[in-house]
Length: 161
Image 1 (tube, rainbow, N blue to C red):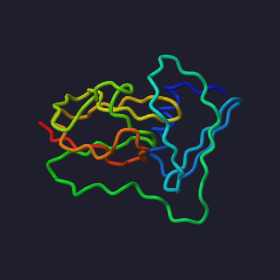
Image 2 (image 1 turned 30 degrees about the vertical axis):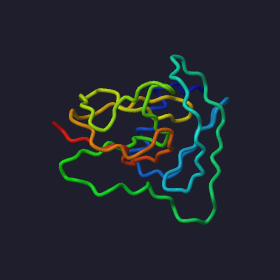
Image 3 (image 1 turned 180 degrees about the vertical axis):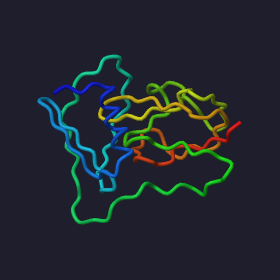
């Protein structure tokens, strides 16, 4: 069984919209496990440059701690009603720039347009560019570069306009 980049995204989107808490898919040369609302031991990896070709991902086992309360996304600071939250559409590692040493996509005070790349989320060695859904000004960035993030976690806040 082969799973390309587009199929992986469609699968993750379908899982995100469902109530499924755990999912496992195994092929000849890979194993995909998705678990939500379960404690996960995160390992930060150094940033990797975006590759144009995608090869099958290696088998990745994520250790799960037993009999502990589910981990919740880190709480965000008080929300203002005039700001739009930009949330993580998947579990991954948050990167502010396309590669180490390069300028960040956005900073606090940056003006952004809808469709503009604002960060990268690395998931299973794939670099996923996150695009702005609204135009406006970045007023808060709540996650540090290279930090693991969870599905639904607020990454930054934008003042539309």
